[in-house]
Image (cartoon, rainbow, N blue to C red; front, side):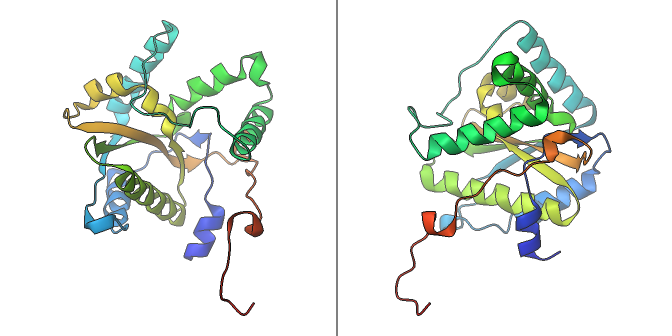
Length: 223
């Protein structure tokens, strides 16, 4: 599989098979992804990987808090306030596709069901968490995004699937305690990693992408 094929094949998977992913494979992915670019070669990412009994214990802890309607506050705003067009429309349409695949509307408890599945890593055997030193700025947030994208493409190359999950940022205290994060690190996002359940309707759609002319401007080219 070449890079173009991996880019076109990758999608956010929301239903995984329980098949385990070995520590050797996970380490190889994380280690190879370290070659992602970063401004000034700061390499600001910190990654934590959960599998097996620790993963199960973590999921159980979060599930218990959900059942008691406990919630935490993010350390950053995942989306801008009063999201504007066309960004608001893109997010809304993606959400509609998810609820349609789930077979239930947002207003019919669909959001709660998706939330619960999300906080179980959608059944994936590996959960990843990405952290940054809270003293860094937006350029380093971009760097960790490039690390995550590199990791997702490498996983696709190996026949694995992923789902990046900023929603984990809504549990900063729980994750900090469970992972024993040092005070200077801030949770940025999580990610599910495993093998896609190809039979699930949750993986049977693709979100739309804007036409080239909507986002790119070319200057000084012949054609």
